[in-house]
Length: 385
Length: 83
Image (cartoon, rainbow over all chains, first blue to last red; front, side, top):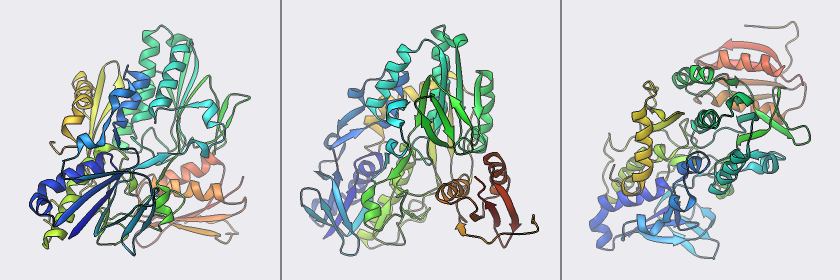
């Protein structure tokens, strides 16, 4: 008996499960392999859609589906919170007291936002990293009649690296359409020395910021928010007044990974081999998606391209063969769309050895993102693309 | 190598070799947040961008670049927290 246990029902966990069914259908049907996904809510949420609740008329109810509906019927779904992982004894404990043993463990536990790490964040700052927060930002934008908007990043790494730039671009376009642009300033704060981590993307985005009159502040690491004076202050000693503050909240990995000694505090990102996706040199533990410490975007796309590697490696272990040299090695592939406003977008496609060379923003890539968002449910989680 | 007449003793060393931009800078920022004024932090980075980005950040943040030296396959950047 081979017991495969997958923690997390996001893009990575769901896709690994469905790809493993394709590779191990016979032993699963024969009862020699079990495949279990544990998810805390039993609901699969398309998180890239949150930004569009704030910026594009999206609705929260269209962004979630039952996880069960996305998994092959051969996969067992357990809904519950993981409270303990004991890698030495190969068991996982759930909040309801249930114990699940495993022979192969996949950690697809994602990342979580911790706005409480910055005092006054909850009262003063808006964000778009949950459906609820994105709707609140939408309401704030509806009520906005002009003033000073500050968009910033309150901790790295964070999910969907282009998102804050996209939001700045989309808000600028919206203010123009509403006749509020002349009465508004938009400031974009980057924690590093340029607009975006990847140099070629930064080189593409920086002239667009200038063209749209969005002021770029580099090396601005958010330190404190002063609600009395309505200013956000940086570790570097700069401060910016705001009427509307939009900050990416700090992110961390799952606490249970830190508690299990699998990921170091305080970040909680799993030390993951960049090619095999094994965790901490353990042959039976794999990670993908936001949970890893890999120097890549925390994005569904990363999990999408990592999942076939994890599935190939686990299938090889189950079948007692060597993993395929190509299919079993992750080369850092990520593909994601990047909105620049005014109905235009571009595409970021890269891997460990090849930085992105984004095409000039156009309508095609904006429409590509719209189509991808709408067809996601039928394609990515089911392993059809 | 940049050296002042009195190079203070290193209080903490961050080994960020193998981490890519902005990893080493973010590690340094985390260490600065956790340190006291007067602490001296050394960052080891194999990312080629660090020896440009980190001194720029040190200047912007008002700290002191104590030393910058290329070693065997990596750069050592030493910073003193001033405020």
